[in-house]
Structures are given as C-alpha cells and as structure tokens.
Amino acid sequence: MRVKEIILLLLLCVAVGCKPDDDGLASAEFAYSDRISWVEQTQWINIYSSAPWSIEAEYSTSEEWCRLTPASGGSTDQSYTAVAIAVARNESGDERSVDFLVHFPSHTVTLTLTQQPRGARLPYIELPAYDESATQIVATHYYSTAYNKSERNYTVLYDTKHRLPLWVAYTLHTSSVNGNAGRADTWEYDPKVPADGQPDLSRSYRGWYDRGHMLPSGSRQSSEVANAQTFYYTNIAPQLNGFNTGKWVDLENRLRTWKGSGADTLYVVTGSVLQTIGGNETVERVGSYANSEKTSSIPNYFYKACLKLTTVDGQPHYKAIAILLPHTDRPANNRLTDDEIMSIDALEEKLGLDFFVNLPDEIEEEIEAICSPNLWGL
Image 1 (tube, rainbow, N blue to C red):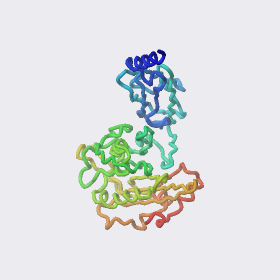
Image 2: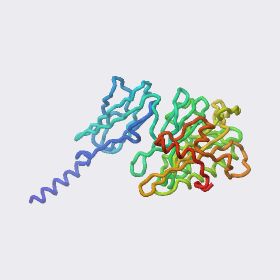
Image 3: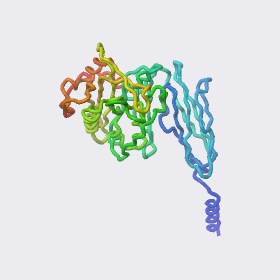
Image 4: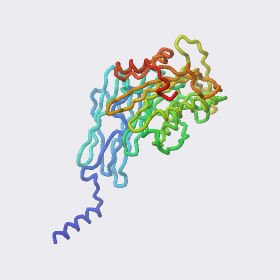
C-alpha cells in the first residue's frame, strides 16, 4: 500500500508540472565576461528557470550605472531568458562593481560585474598597449561555445574619425579555427561602437577596394556567432582587390597552419597603418556603394604581429615574428620578402606601438628581439 501511495504522489507531481527549478536547480550566469572595460556597452545575463525570478542590483557606489531589461520573468513555457544589461561609461578614475541578486523561489544567485576605470587596460596576452579617447574605442567581443562556455573572440581598437580598425587582437587555436560554421556574410554595425563612426558596408567599398577582414572569417569556424562577429564593420578595412585576394589571403592561410595543435595557441595582432613613424605617406579616403559620404581612410600598410605559445612537458615556450606588407594592388607574387619579415621590436620601432605588453617583462624582451624566419617555415 505504501508503494502505491508513493507512485500516486509521483504521478501527481508530473501532472501538476513539477520542475527542476522548484528544487533549486534554476541558475543564472553572465553570457560573457564578469570584468569589462570602461566604455558604454551591453552585457548579458543568461537565466535558466521556468519558475518566477527577479533581479535587484546593489552598487559599490551611489551611482546606478546599469539598466536591466527585463528585470523579472519566469513562466511555465519559458526556461531560458537573456537579460540585457545596458552599462554606462565609467568616466571616473576608480574601478566599480555591482552585485546582481537573481532571486528564484528557492534560492538566490549573486553575480558580480566589475567595470574598469577610464584608461585601464584589459589583461589579455594578445593585446598591445593602447589608450582610448573620444575617437578611439576599444571593444571586446565574446561568444558562447557548444558547452555554454564564454569564449573571447577578438578585441578591436577602432578609430571613428578614420572609420578604420587600427588593430584587431585575437587568438588562434584548434578549438576556435576547426569546424564548419561557414561564412555568415551578415555585414552589420558593431553594437559596441557608435554607428556614426562606422562606414555602411552592407555593400562594398567603392572602386577597386574590397571589404578586407582583420580577423578572417575562415579563422572562426567553430561557432556561427563567432563567425558572424567577424563581419562587424569594425573588423573590416578597405583593401585593394589584388592585395586582398593575393598576398593577404595567403598570409591568413599561413597563420592558420601556425596555430599548431592541441593546447598550442597563436596570439595575433592584425593592424592597419596610415603612416609610419617619421613617414609622410599620403592618406586617402573611400566611401562605400551603400553610403559614399561616410568615408574611411585607406591604409598604406597592413601588418601581423604573432606570438606562439607551445607547452612542452608542462613548460611554456614562446616565439614571435612580425610581418609588415605595403598595401599594393598586384604584388609580383605572394612570397614574403626579407624586408617584410622582421622582429616584433623592429615593427614596434616603425609603428610606435608596444606589442604583447601583458607578457612577463623578461619573456617579452627576449622574444621580441629575435627574428628567426626558419622557425616559422619562411
């Protein structure tokens, strides 16, 4: 008789719709990073619950600098909700944080979001030193993997005056490159940069200029979202057709072979150069067929700064190399010349930049002084 009663109770539970959420299994997490830069942006909280939920914010300062949409929800036919967090700029000189208390019927989840102060830099190994300004904006894009893990896609330093990415920094490794995501061809404005400061590239640049990727679409095949983000206008620069379809694409393919296998990682900075240090190169502009008025500056050079990390017997080993290509339409061939291959130090001297500043100083100084093309199959 006792067994029958238990069975009846279980059947009744199914009939009235008992859910894991009612037992405290509802969850909430940031879709991307819990530590963000100072600029205005949108972050997301993923909530998994078909039971009612609500969010309240507790700030470390008196200013309320986030807006949640929606701030509550939950229904019997919806188990997933993406909550948008509109984040204001942090113009202060101090780091600030906010605790989001996500209340479920049986428990509360606390998520802490920390925003860096203006001028603070992100800690990623691939990043060069940089300074943000009213016209130069740093934005980092993330995506979720098949296992719902947040993955960094790329970081861009974008110049809204020139409507041009000055550099895009990213990693190449097996888990991000391999896959069959295909080519999104979505071509859209970067939501983290004011649209007025971006060209309209829904159609290509005018004349002989292609929409040239800084982070190639072919290097983000593990995720359709990651691939679509490579079509943000902030990842695109005007490139002469012969350059884009010749020496540039050949270099992109070469870097994918440099990524190695397993846990190996290639850290890359791809950049555009208007003028070298001490140079007097002429800088012209070009519009697009979609909007000829919102013009972009045309780079005179493009470069790639590469840092390879290989782990052997649990120990990290680094090597680095840089390539600087003149932006010409029809190179004689796709072979890299001795003048185009150089050490990181040599590239820094030409451009006035400082690459891989988040490495330990002793490692940075050692590897950036070396140029060994033979170690890279060149």
